[in-house]
Every structure is written in C-alpha cells, then in structure tokens.
Image 1 (cartoon, rainbow, N blue to C red):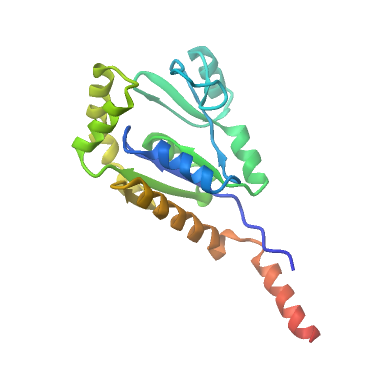
Image 2 (cartoon, rainbow, N blue to C red):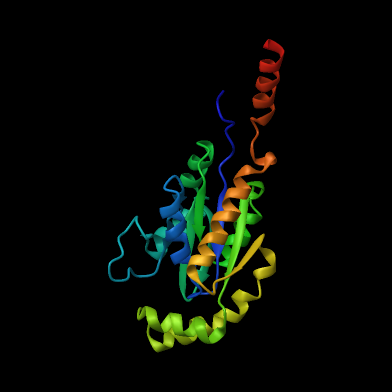
Length: 214
C-alpha cells in the first residue's frame, strides 16, 4: 500500500543576526537533502565567496522593486538599508509537488508568510542566543562586517528578539548540536501530524478494505 502523501511544509527559521540560524539551516539541509532551501532575493552586495542564485539572487533596487510591483514576492522587507524578499514562484511550485521549503528569514518576512494564504502550512521556529555577550562575540568571530555594521546589528537585536512569542517553537542555541537535534525533532513531529496528511482518509479506507478481504 502506498504511503499517504502529505502537503509540503514552509519551515521558517528566524533569529537576531549571529544567533546561528544559517548554520542550523545548513545542518538541516544536510540531514534531509529532500528539503528545498528558499533562496531569497536581496539588493545588498555579494560577500566574498557568494554566488548569485546560490546564497541569494542579487538584484538591483529597480529589479527588486519590479518584482514586488508584479506580485512576484511572497514576502519582502528592508533590513539594514538593503531589501530582502522571497520569490513566490519557486515556493508555490514546491508546494504543488508536496516538497518542504526551508526559509532563513527575519521576523518581518516570517510575519508576512504567516499572514499569507499559505499560513496553514507554516512551521515557525525562532532561534535565541544564550546571552547578548555571546551574540556579539559570534558576530565578531564571523569577521564579515565592520565595527559600524556590527554595532547596527546589535542595536537591532533587541527588537528582533522581542518577536519570539509570535513563533510556534523557540530554541535557545546554547550548543549547536543540541539545537540541531531539537530542530529535527520538531520537523519529524510536524510532518506526522494528521491534519498535514490529506490522503490519510483514503489510506485508512484501504486498510479497512484489506480487513474486509480477509
């Protein structure tokens, strides 16, 4: 008998910058290669080693504005002077195929998706740092941003953290291995929920038919 097919999930990971959501997103993708990672569009400049279409779709401000105007974004926001957004087409295509999509986005983007027509398929998870001192240390260890940019990110963190209560789950990233294990547990449980498996009725009818045929 064929296993019941469930709808694809929209898995949102959010956190203040430096709390570890991108690392956890990569680990989750390695754990389950069937996950589709949602590649965001952005107007910021590429960092060293980043490739267009892999880490981000790098757009000019006019290109980004045109996508928004054409209703081509599932969500979008301005963060630290640059625009970020999720192209709608690839997400809708994945949903139609029953594939899970993983989003590494901020609270503003997560809020827009949770208010969209796809809200019933969203699983939202907020990642908290163990302390503010640890958060700043992680930002400096990355060595990707200037002192001015780091100061801006730290100033923004308090507001970002204040939105933790809007999420379905919250993980305190004291240890990345433990946080990864929590993420896997959440995803496994959400996938098994009865209301996420629309073909269960047909599947159970098939089981009953097997009883009748005995």
